[in-house]
Image 1: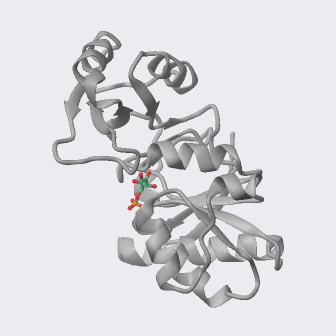
Image 2 (image 1 turned 120 degrees about the vertical axis):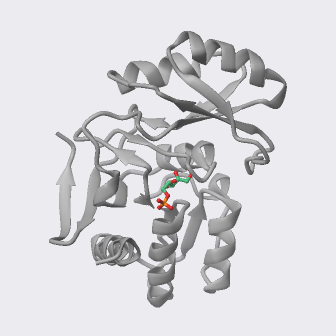
Length: 224
Ligand code: 5RP
């Protein structure tokens, strides 16, 4: 199976997972990226079975609208029964690195409002220790150099993601060569640096369920 086929397989599995939660008043949270896009494309077939979606990026909102799915502002909705999104890395505790697509802050906000977080990923995303994928950190532009120096103190090698502006008008530093042995502590430490909007560690609010696609099928994994 190709990686694209694996992404579509986990998207299909996520549809099966969320279907019992749907209803005419139900609004669901939707993430960002190529795997989330597969999920959005499959969700189009369920129109009429739910009210609409809150999106974690402008790109996902546009894709939802292109399928005729209503998109709501999070402030209009409140709590969501479920949030479905991909990840750049995920460990056995279902802690994740996210933000490869620069949508980490909105992803974290929508995930915080969701009762259940379903992570959909192909097997290449499953890791023993987080940090091989460069950890994205969203920063207020004027704080970029200061935050980079602070991240270096923590052991990272931060690199400015040139030409990328987040949906919030901020910039991204990607932390290379960063062995993250304690994701919960590191998430809090980075967030405490002045000028950081948020970082791509999703440990305080990890996933509740991982749907992991491999050539052997889709495995349902709960947090260890
Ligand atoms: C975007 C994200 C994505 O979930 C992550 O980058 C995975 O993307 P893909 O499904 O394309 O591999 O966090 O900010």
